[in-house]
Image (tube, rainbow, N blue to C red; front, side, top):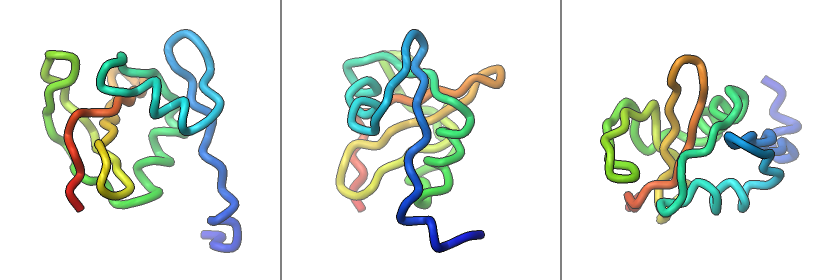
Length: 102
């Protein structure tokens, strides 16, 4: 693995269901608990899985009033987690109302 470019690595472009998202903050805003899941690329899914250790893996949590199996949850500290999952080779993410108490 090339460790020289880790600090320069950009977050891959996120593609929601209907339009493109161009930055991380917009991704977080779009995947908020009040919003709907956003469709992302497999590259984005893999990026978030690999950038930090997951907060959880393989849990079923409540999102938008329904139970959803998640592949993993991501958080960078004391913040709400973002859940990631895959259905039929399509990848999704949504911020949860679950606080990561690191």
